[in-house]
Length: 246
Ligand code: HEC
Ligand code: HEC
Ligand code: HEC
Ligand code: HEC
Ligand code: HEC
Image (cartoon, rainbow, N blue to C red; front, side, top):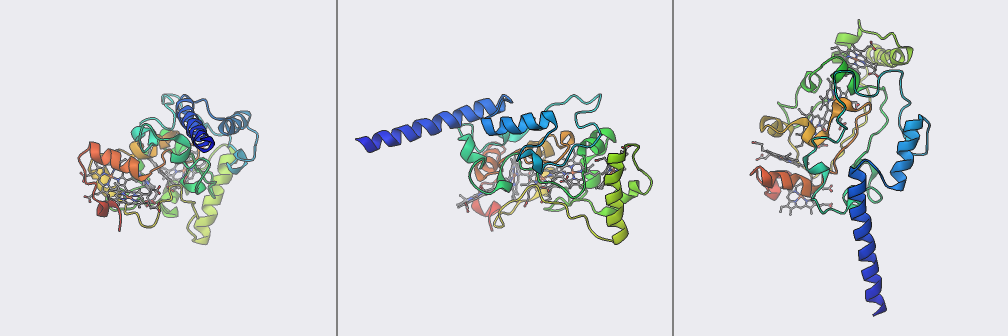
């Protein structure tokens, strides 16, 4: 009798926390841990988690004039969740599982490269840089040569931004690739294919969110199996195991 009460208690608590997590987080309020990070970001200071993020440059980190800020998660399929009733904590590996599979994962990059500056500021198309997304299973990160096409000439009036561009030039001078950290890390057994999605009319933001609004690229979706399959069902695409698994 006692034991069944204990189970009931655990179920009730997980249900409450899970549901509460979904509702509150989506309303931009967050659970205690996130709140601390958000506050630290607003204050421009560093907490233990915010410390992982690169210091802000003197460049606009918000949306530029003429580009209404929508929020980085806008347009993500099913808000990045495997199912509407997903328990938030479990689905996003917020407290369990590897950090790089968590929603919100954004590793510090070797160069403070901002998609805001390039996508909004310079009106560059995603495929100008990630040029092979429509041609291959992988979406390449552009190599130094492509960057130098502009940055041989283009510097910045802002010293902080210019220091970042200097770093880029040093990699170019050394003939080394930039050691970008991967933001979306998927298990090895997974077979993903960009080309099929891009050709099939699935847009970048349905999976990656509003990258053009991200000062540092972050993962906006759990990208769990249920999430992939949910969309495949809706759009009448194969949900055969071998479609996605080797
Ligand atoms: C000026 C070139 C450039 C443009 C334009 C650009 N990107 Fe990027 N993108 C990069 C570079 C460099 C990286 C690697 C560094 C980083 O993660 O910030 C990157 C990283 C990413 C990543 C994370 C990859 C990972 O490691 O998992 C995604 C997703 C992405 N870009 C999507 C987009 C989308 C969507 C657009 C259009 C809205 C876009 N990019 C436009 C250069 C560009
Ligand atoms: C089409 C031309 C073009 C290309 C290609 C380009 N950039 Fe830029 N980049 C610019 C311009 C313009 C600025 C803004 C300079 C300023 O502040 O006035 C800029 C700013 C920057 C800055 C400083 C501001 C910031 O983003 O933090 C960095 C760093 C940078 N670029 C890195 C890169 C890298 C890395 C690549 C290759 C993936 C790249 N750029 C490709 C035009 C380009
Ligand atoms: C159906 C969902 C989906 C769509 C649509 C999508 N991506 Fe991705 N993207 C992913 C997944 C999943 C990964 C991780 C792949 C891996 O690690 O195997 C990824 C990884 C990336 C990477 C890192 C390099 C790589 O291939 O691992 C870049 C860059 C990127 N995407 C850019 C884009 C751009 C630009 C678009 C739009 C033209 C786009 N993606 C559309 C799901 C998507
Ligand atoms: C927003 C919707 C959406 C999401 C999310 C999505 N897919 Fe897809 N996927 C599609 C569509 C639509 C197609 C069919 C494109 C076409 O017409 O060929 C497709 C096709 C594919 C294919 C090729 C199928 C074939 O027949 O060869 C693979 C592999 C695939 N998806 C894997 C994934 C994986 C893995 C994920 C999760 C990380 C994922 N997809 C998430 C919409 C989606
Ligand atoms: C649309 C793509 C897609 C299809 C179809 C699909 N899977 Fe998956 N599967 C995934 C993704 C993405 C993951 C990684 C989930 C994660 O890391 O949380 C995964 C993970 C798994 C895992 C978990 C492995 C682990 O270590 O946790 C198993 C087991 C699995 N799939 C079995 C299947 C079976 C059986 C089928 C056929 C009924 C199937 N999958 C069909 C995308 C797919």
